[in-house]
Image 1 (cartoon, rainbow, N blue to C red):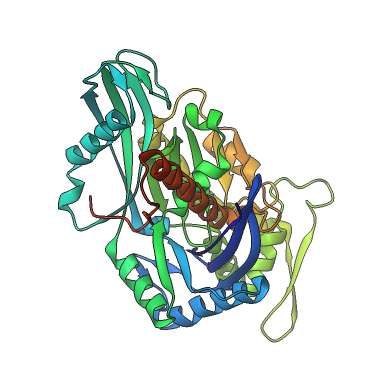
Image 2: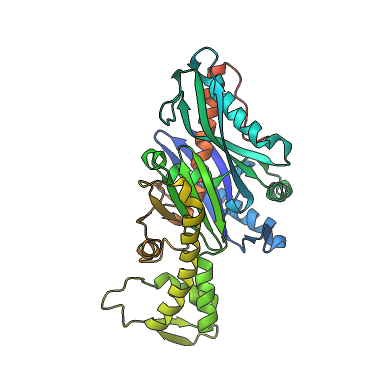
Length: 397
């Protein structure tokens, strides 16, 4: 059965609205999209709050025009800046010696109770298992069957109310109904990383324009999450400042930069135009010093985060993946990051007929998570014999 959804995702430099259909094996069939640049957010607030309603309106209108439909309701992705990941191990008894849905739900409830999530003024977007252990067995994601005890590591993605209130008001002004809030961070983690990668815990680095998001993913859960206040836009800003050129020209230089040049690139020059249309030429060695000094600030932050905080969640077989438009699209960026942190790095991108770029990984992850959540709730509703309800509007606790 073909289903259609609309979703909006707030990146650090762009707002993306998608209208997507799922049909057959391809549930990332984007029939309409609208990408609008904006000034993003920092320190938990919009950088240009008075422009937000217009930017949201423009993004939605562009998607509507391409798809040929009117958006009256949609799902909203909450950026990593406004979420927190909390995790807890819990254990429960299986009274009948059988691990079933009731026992699985009980161990997840026990984890929520231990974290006292119901007492806070927060919205729980997702609760997901990293692993289960039946009795004294091995970690698994399928605990069903015989067993007397079930232990689990359960994580909860909790959203800050300020974002929810702001976006709710924007869409109220536009007369659009919000069907629910979800985490694109979780969506892109599940979309980009295979089951095998998640079984051994993998690290996903999403380098955006204004910040870099780091997630350690195990099972179906993000078990560690951090936001670093530096991204690709800072490289552009450093070039603009040091060379005294417009941001537009600096962005052009950054996009054309090659980290591992061949013999033809080593002596190359970068040519751009200033605000008055005058041509400006810079030798590679000048550009290289600025770019790599700026990137080193980011890679040092990533390396410190991995060694001090994320390392406890990773094993010897854990993989590191890079996505987002801040570094992955720079030629040689992956290799440079790998050398700086001393780990192999792979670029992860979603497979989609449209928007098939690391730039849109988070947005595509959101769309995929919506379809996955709808299917899971339908299956659960059918299993319980009830009537399907919209369960995306999360509750406290």
